[in-house]
Amino acid sequence: MVYWMIKLYFRYSLAIGITSQQFSNRKFYSTLFSRTYALIANIVTLIMLPIVMWQIRLVFQQKRSFPQLILITNNVREVVSFLVIVYTVLSRGFRDTAFKEMQPLLLTLFREEKRCGFKGIGGVGRSLRILLFVKFITLSWLCVTDVLFLFYSSDAITLVNLVRFFFMCNTNNILEMVPMGYFLALWHIARGFDCVNRRLDQIVKSKSPRNHRELQHLWLLHACLTKTALNINKIYAPQMLASRFDHFVIGVIQAYWGAVFTFDLTTPFFWVVYGSVQYQVRSLDYYLIDNMCDVAVEYHDSAKHSWSEVGWTKEISSYVIYSNSSKLQLWSCGLFQANRSMWFAMISSVLYYILVLLQFHLVMGK
Figure 1: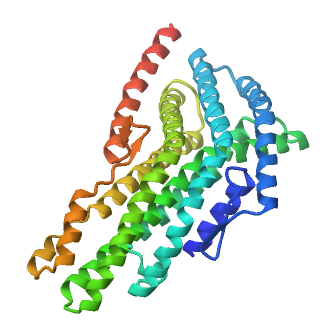
Figure 2 (figure 1 turned 180 degrees about the horizontal axis):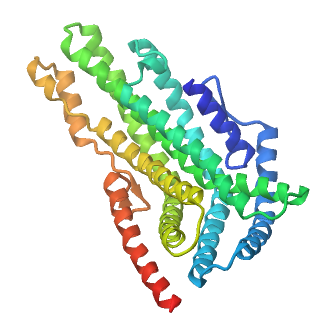
Figure 3 (figure 1 turned 60 degrees about the vertical axis):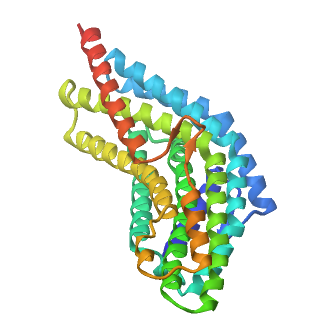
């Protein structure tokens, strides 16, 4: 089921033009058709996006008489989303490079898992499987339910409006789909570290010289995983920085909207519940990404306390020295490290700016 979900993710990613890569039989590949289609989809997105966003903005303003700050924040939200989507479309080649970077590592990882007896998704740690399933649930929820707000912002049901609605749904989903690629890359890397750690525990407790020789292969795999993680993070860092800024802006504006529509304007109960649930799911979705960064680092730095109870060979001692000296730090463009602490800091900043917007709302309403 996991590979089916991953394949579905890459097919939809190709459909909306954020990658030209496809995933099948545990391999990434691209064809002339996929590259041509992705290029055409990118051109159409860049040309049509500002026109469609402007039309939806006009329809939204005609729905009812909104406070002035609601209209201002809606414009800010649309401008930020537009800029992030444009950057995402233009940087597609870098993300395709990241998938190519993962290809040889994935083949090595699957081969090592099969040799170590951790074959298939059943051999993956339970916590990693839960993380992946929850992330797919939150991503699916956001992609499906975002259409409700767009439908509300649409005019009468006509062919032109349906085409515009379909276009904006897929374009807005770009903002949700791209971070998932970063999550999947780190998830496979954490999976590799977990495989290495579990097999090393078995080797250390055994006395076979053959198993000790296997340590060299696991050592090399651990080093490749670390190098690939750093390369993937370097490629994705600007994209994740832009996505984080977009998430921060949307978080502040949607929370402000939620307070105004709940307590200051007459709003149907359905929309209040929808906005609240949507906000919580969006926050959880981004938390899972930062949590995945922490999980990858924790698996990389896995403590070897249980090894002190058995005798060490020269090979094991050398590996412990390497492990203690090897550090994995996932920086975002050298500004900050992506982890759970960064997520909590961002939530604190969101709460602060919500209060600022509410103060402006009260002043402008007088």
